[in-house]
Image (tube, rainbow, N blue to C red; front, side, top):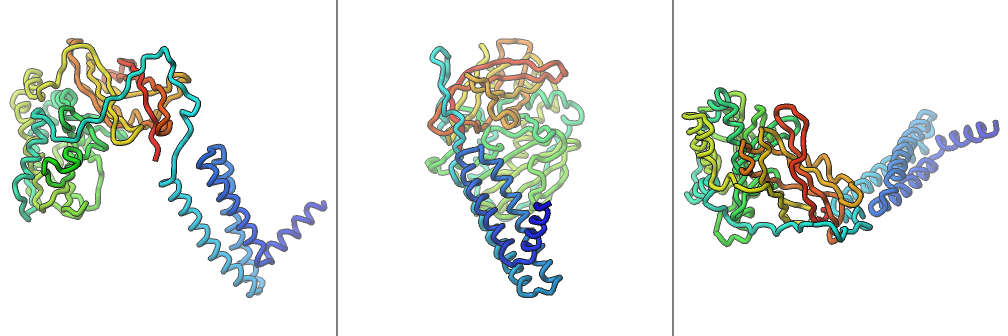
Length: 449
């Protein structure tokens, strides 16, 4: 039973001391810092680092326990020393954790995924195309033109918005199928699901191509990075909450109003400009508009609502497939075989997809990706979340409808390309089993900080 006696002596010395608890904390903390630092380049050290963090936390509580023991026994000097050690250890611990968190966010994020990978010589591998030049969209994007034209008129100081979304409300109540098919068929909308809710966000043309940006926000930089076209600064997003919920939730300065109301929007400041976020109820649907622009008058928001109303009004008057097709932007339906392309984005590992396909029935498409030699799935959950979209369809297999999104592949490092097989999967609204529509191999890189 010598070990019990030795253990009892250790605990007695530990709780009676003013320096042993601090020494244990310092040892555990030093070991944790070394292990955590090593984990940035050697992932196998992540588990030891986690265990040492737990040990460091226990040793911190040990200092507290020793201090309480000494104060209870009226050993004021030792207790005060423990208290000072506790405060010093807390400050040191916060500094260490803050430094590690900062390093994890700003430091290199190489994962070594592609270190020993090679592209098979006999595999047909496509190269992603160049990123489209940032410039205003073609004439097919009438929505973009309407918003830019609204900014060409000097804005006033009145932030009152007249919320007329009657066409959307009527279609949602009386012709939801026609509304859903219109949104899915038009390249000007991306219909997707996120966190269990369905949304439709307006997609803009960048140069000659329809392109969905990160989260669907469009700015002056999206169209005119170097200010060659003289566009004013702005940022905006239009989203329809098809499940009755806004995408952005409550931003703190949101204004909620109903169809037909006229209300001054609450303004805050964002990027040095008046900022607004409004959510308009339209029966079971909502319209959500974010705007940053130089004047208090909500020119982009009002222009977006006016264009939405004019876009959907013909479907209210004649909710038919013929009307639907007549309202699609020119070039919305291509004839020929399906196609799948990728475009580079602003950093390696970030891509824009461009799909033309026809599943022949209503439903959702999404992407899967695999490293070709080992079949390792790539960014599985994130890729499905970012790429899912309800697309147009028809009974004519020669007709192809557009799908596009913006996504990131996290496996791999810059400058270390490898081959990835991308698959396009389709989930029918009918409940039938999902099926693969397309696949194509691309030479890609992973994203890193």
